[in-house]
Amino acid sequence: MLPSQRDLRSASEYPKSLSSWLELDYFRRPRRLRRLRRLVPWTVLLLSTGLIAALTWLPGNRRIYQADSVSTAHAIFNEDCEACHNASFGTAKRLLRGNNELRSVTDEACLRCHAGDAHHVRQVGQSACVKCHHEHRGRIAMARVEDGHCIACHTDLTRHTDATKPGDADRPFRDVTSFLGGRQPHPRFFLTDNPQDEGTIRFNHEAHMNPKGLLVAGSLERKQLRCTDCHQTDDAGRYMKPIRYQKHCRDCHPLNVRVFGTIDEIEAQEEADRFRAEPASHPADAGEGLDTVRAVLRDRFLQFAYQYPSVHAPRSRTEAESPIPGRSDPDSGSTTRSAADWAEQQLRENTRMLFDGPGGCRYCHRLAAPSRRNSEADPTPRFEPPRIASRWFPHSVFSHERHRSLDCRQCHAQATESRSTSDVLMPSIESCQKCHNGTPQGARTDCVECHAYHAPQETRDSPRDLAIEDFLRGQGVHAPAKTPRTPTGR
Image 1: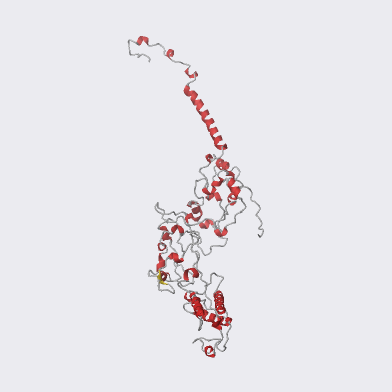
Image 2 (image 1 turned 90 degrees about the horizontal axis):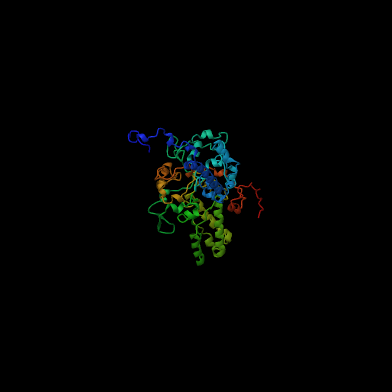
């Protein structure tokens, strides 16, 4: 340290010039910090280059180029980027131009495996698959798109609809931006104030849901019905199977038939009792009708007559002149009858009770107006088709299995008080919004929670020409489509 100039004793020691104390050529000498400043950038550059090269060429290390892992469904193509990225320099063009609309995955790559389709026949323009379905977002479902993709068009449907194409003439356009509310809330499930069920089957839900139970035919016991006794879901747990008489109604409403006339043979009488315990058949599908019921009954009576000939054996004159009171007997003037004649007589008596009796078909089915008959020789009545709706909301998807822990009346509350077939017992949008409320404690309110983008009626068939080995190797999926195979008829 230089001596202080204020110190008189050391003032004589202070040099006259400070230049002798300084190294004027210090800047020409290399220093450690300067050497490090030159060495560090080159070292970092070389290490980064080596690391990138290692991550590029070592197998199974391409994640450095991904925003995140691929979705679960596409995990098999994780090592085969070309399976999807088939647009030449698509990624580079998007980065250089700064245009997010440029894609490196074309629709052809998606349609190699997926049978994609248009959203609606009246849609204006077509959207690329990857515009809505974004990959490299982790192990999530690519089908769960954000609401923004839907609202982009549904905020103003008129502007995105081709009015020159037919379709949805009876369905007014409804713009929507949110399921819960806001400026354009989701419309009601039924656009009419008083929807009517067009079904023709007479049914009373209130009577069938009697807490005291219902009397079972042939028994003094009561059975308390539950909703699931009749309404059962399909194998996927989504929608309800059709109601069938043989499975759901027969036990309580049997179509009983009987053998008329006097039977002397004990075994024949016992068989007649069993015959009565077996109800008449009911048409199983739309292709069957009352003619089917008649045919089955005729076969049953013929089999009974062939098994026990005594029921149509020659009768005495007294028996022949004593028909059933109030009914005409076509064989009253004869003393012999064949098995076929006896079966026809039994068939006429039973079908009269089934078709025209108050406890037969008329109990549930409604006669066509006016009632039409085939001919005078065949006085079979004509009933209106059931017209029971299989799907009330065909433009949405639903899963009863996911809601199985709820009491059915939580959503179908009006079922306990319904007495008329015309009552529509579907839930309202308010009942759904109780759970799907957009709060942390509520269920999701995404558009795709209930709606699917792709119209099922417009679905295109998949190529179905790929082999299992193509997927396992992660190769071949991006290859040109093969020529469709021609069925051999075997």
